[in-house]
Image (cartoon, rainbow, N blue to C red; front, side):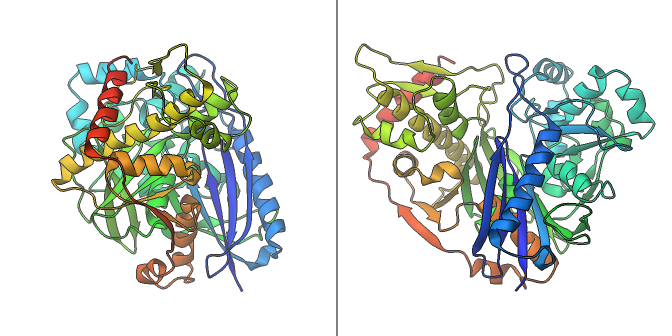
Amino acid sequence: MKYILAIDQGTTGTTVVVLDRELNVRGRVNREFRQIFPKPGWVEHDPEEIWQSTLDTVAAAVDQAGVAPADIAAVGITNQRETTVVWERSTGRAIHNAIVWQDRRTASRLSLLKQAGLEERFRAGTGLVLDPYFSGSKIEWILDHVDGARAAAGRGELAFGTIDTYLLWRLTGGTAHKTDVSNASRTLLMDLRGQAWDDELLGHLNIPREVLPEICGNAEIFGEVRGVPGLADGTPVSGMAGDQQAALFGQACFSAGEAKCTYGTGAFLLMNTGAEPVRSNAGLLTTAAWRIGGESAYALEGSAFIAGAAVQWLRDGLELFSSAPEVEELARSVEDSGGVVFVPALTGLGAPHWNPDARGVIYGLTRGTTRGHVARAALEGIAFQNVDILTAMESDLGHPLTTLKVDGGACANNLLMQFQADTLGVPIVRPVMTDTTALGSALMAGLAVGMFSDLDAIRATWRADREFTPSMSSADRAEHMARWQGGLARV
């Protein structure tokens, strides 16, 4: 019996899952790490804490699974995508904290590029909008704000990576500096059709090519493990994808028109559009889904920056409850939100609005408002954001979505899932295994080493847990959406 180990390096913590050939979970361990907020709108992580959380969870998950390191056939990596690290090649030491995808510090810099008339060039080349969300302007900021960094980069002494690349470097003892097409497509620097770094865009953002990793596919040997407790030296790292593309893969959305929504720190709705990128006219992103065996797939994506993070804020910032799962019970303590609307724009608004200066709003408060109303409004706000995204997606495609698969931690919240089905007006299908980001990278890793024969074999393993059927009247849905629009007008 051989096993796959999947590292899911997320925004608030690292999860490692050990799976057997039948995709049964044999071990699963999570460790949270520190969130750093140096200034309003700035979000950072300590790369060493990310690496230590990875070491801890790998060793603990293998121990929990009760397997020998030599029995791990392959390692997969999935990651928070746009979060940016720059490190010294000679030591592996990061020269600055990782700048997280939620960080908004480069908004003014990107405004200058827009004023220079460059947004269409970036959009046409990368499928992305000029927003601080993406990695390119974060790299530029680090090189410009760390003493000596730009000169060192020009000499080839520094390396850039999103978290997949950083973990690969550390796992392989600094022998592999690579990324995959899904993560590279989130940098503002990769030509989407050619799947190669674009020298013109590098020039606009002052990024030296010397810092960039090699762009690879998603299911191939990226490197071999060296000196990692719990893993045998020589174990191949053979699957890699950004978390949302990994979730699309883990949900077996292999055909054009199939879609999923991941409820993590943010909410991310992706639809497979097949072998050709589809340009959005409604504020969505066009992104690489994966490249496997030389065949590429693309996706339309809508991203809401805050989803589960809103619940985390209610827990930690407002101290309304002590653990995230309690939000559902608290929200069920009232029949509705009592007219309260919560727009969770705590780090700006993503698709389809793209307003980096937006800030969160809770309105409609009265003397009768309780913690329960606020909790319910928060869950509704998460759902409303996805309605806006799906409406934009249907506009781009010219036809309605019929079913949406869901995953991520918050999809365990039955109240949220039912409200999402009601407001979207389509059935919501939750799988048996909701760790689909980890699952996707594991499946890619298994494909590369021959544990799975093809996509059809993988599709046959996918199993549904529950379907949520819409039950809200069209009049009630319209009333809810009108209140949501009133909230958006106040951000």
